[in-house]
Image (cartoon, rainbow, N blue to C red; front, side, top):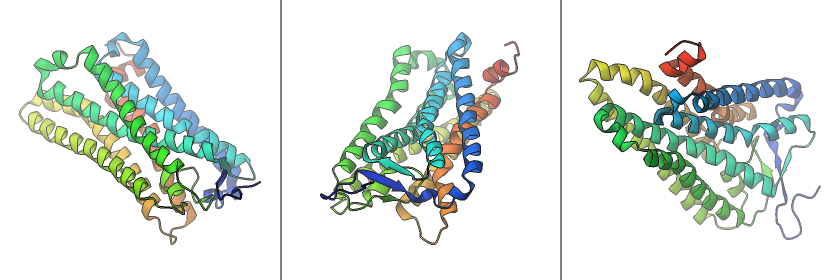
Length: 306
């Protein structure tokens, strides 16, 4: 199979992250399939619960539904291809397929941050401005807040992918289990200045949302210290959100630092674990955390009457 043609244009990429795990492919295939099934089951169950129960048609639960959809979207971009690669003797992906996979995974990861920022705003209004909540969180505002994470992230990642697609590549070897934008950019034999600017712009964009979340929680905590009732609201509805933020942020920080500053001294197995964290941990833990911590959802899970 030809990976680079005479014009030095890459047509296929090889994924070398599988080198260390192919001896135990059956075990990894079974565990991965189980993990993917659990992710689908947990997230789809929570989505259906929110959609079918009119009592859960509130902004907080609608945004939670959006977070679960984002998790399913991102994992769909990784798990099916990963499972096929475990069954194959040659782990390759087409140029177009690599860009699509990058778009899907990055859109989901970035979308998670923006959705968590939207959820922080919702909790801020609910606890710090309770009398204004329904006038602020109108149907139009909720519809916009549901759309905003997808529109902003899709636009940002589309620019990233377009810039990457214009690079002239002199290699086709990706040292990961899946395609990532920086892994492709590193193969370029032309200037990557615009790609770097775009990448750091994206990092600043999502850092701004994290800063917004932190500021929201500072105000939330100040407000909750004044009222026992508000403390109860904080523990019930904000703690799951805070845990989700920590999980997503830590997992993505590992991925960003690994992609840009990876060391050859780290074994391939450790690199694989780092690279897979945000594709495994948040999609499983997010529905579990919210399902066990939010009272109304817990009641539906255990068949209790509200």
